[in-house]
Length: 381
Image (cartoon, rainbow, N blue to C red; front, side, top):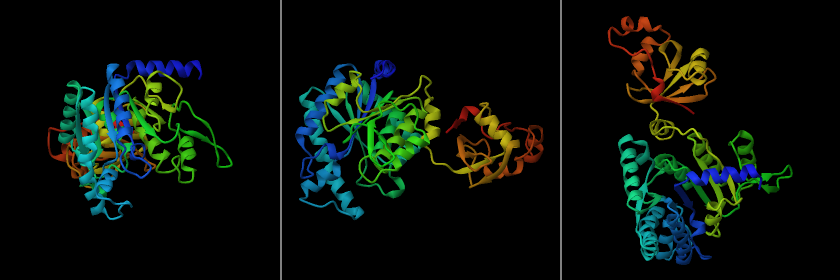
């Protein structure tokens, strides 16, 4: 381990008083696919060790469907959505019972939060979730979070728990998110398709790094495996937070992580943290429409940190109202920002391309905004 890597870890861990830990169902079951109480006990023991260090822990866990299958004596995972939802409904309480038993034996309680994508996209529900998490952490309750598999359908799914863990970390302003998996971090992909050495630190999720993961063949390091973890890391780094991928087959690796050892792969964040308001804009809300801008407006917003003025708007897509969240695309069609619109689609259609002094006459009103999207309500992606 290089001295720079060691210093990076030490600095990160010094500030990581709040951490999100994600554990997949494969790490919690025995050889028959049934939830293993001993594995859950080992995990809670390591979480207790972190709590005793003064760290606040949020757990994102899978395993409800596996627990339901075991209770219903199902040997094969169902393919039909209603059957999967039934297994989740049966298994969720059983899984939480195991967690609560282990937590209570160590002197604290856990609380369940079942989420759908709508719970974090809707602003009021987003804030309610944030307040609940803060209260649980303040009072010493371990938040145990999972997707609400008993009611979710494609339209309101997060997709996988790597992404859910990253979003929870972003929402909770956790300096570190740890993804425990069945491999020891990300490895180099060699020209012959085999894997080389483990990559200790990845400062940025570049296209080359994504291609390295996407070129694999369907195992844990492949698309849907490592790709989802890299996307999660990318999200965390965007807001200035860190993500760490590590081997969870031995839960004691959590102690090695927080001892600053060179295990797994670290994606370090930056000193500059994105505000809570801009985090919500960047990752959570539904987008109502798209604003396409010219080259001058693209440079002003993307490079100079300015507001978006109506004069730089070339065209519009979708129907949106004042106060809705819109995407902002450059001349090449690539989305580079999101923001809250000061005008409706119809109003912007009337004033796009116009100078500020022309806006009152075009709208037939003396009260107006100079900005189509103010920089305080805009975030670069």
